[in-house]
Amino acid sequence: MDSSLYPQATAALAHKRRELAPEPLQAFKAFSAAVFADGALPGVTKQLIAVAVAHVTQCPYCIKGHTAAALKHGASEQQIMEAIWVAAEMRAGGAYAHSALALDVMQHAHEQQAG
Image (cartoon, rainbow, N blue to C red; front, top):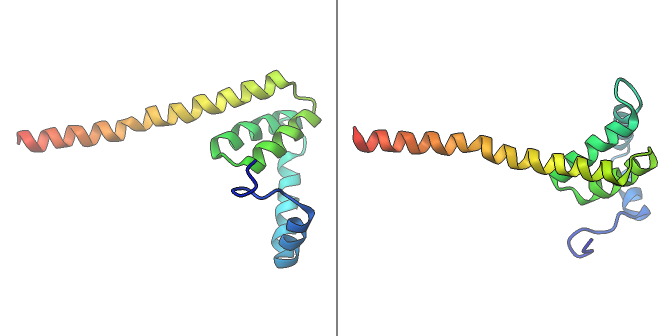
């Protein structure tokens, strides 16, 4: 990561977050622990979902953290890469699906010109 764009996650930054807003941080950590705990979906599946979502949201910290967590939970490199490809397809699919908005505007523009 380019440190001029994205600072390294450090203990000092974590301490500053905790110092500035300890209650929300504690609540967020509890929420995160509950979300990623084994449940109907095992933790490894949740981490693979997180890897995919992190790529769609394009959060470099999340990409690194959840890739490491997925590996720690036993995900293979192939599973991680497939999750990333799912993210890429979903991102592209969203652009394709939303083309309906542009097509609708174009159709209305033609109708206004003709009418």
